[in-house]
Image (cartoon, rainbow, N blue to C red; front, side, top):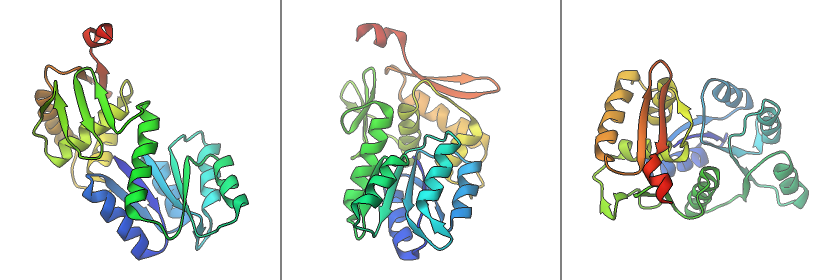
Length: 228
């Protein structure tokens, strides 16, 4: 997935991005509100991890800014404050969850997975499409119980398609989600990875369609929908 980490404390931001990076996710980092607004205005994210106390203002102002622009990206708020009003305020402004510093990175990762699952409509730790299953914890995918041999980027691409079933994803958006904002990769790299993934999930319930001039759309095949 593609995450935005808004945190001005360098070691905390580095620890978060490193932990999520080991799970195959791409992370952009912003230390200031203005930087966060620039990132959010130019790229699509699956989740924002947002510190409240920033050098140029409150993270809650950024949260309000997102929601005023109808940006529904899930937001996990980090706060060193213990006041109940601060927690209530964050949730009322549209946060999906919050954690109080200091926190355990394992718990942070688990909460991130939970938020992503809720967004995709899945109840457990597994994303599915017909007879295809992807475990968000182990990063393993299988079809009819037989494990697929996927590279880390193929795992990430599959996760993106499963979370965004039915949504048209532009190539440029997939480049950023798969490689990050600073990557030199282009649309040709996306075509290569989509082609590889499509071959590996062939025969499963996931149909990855190419929409000429638009991008890609992942759908559950009609046969599998009827079976359910």
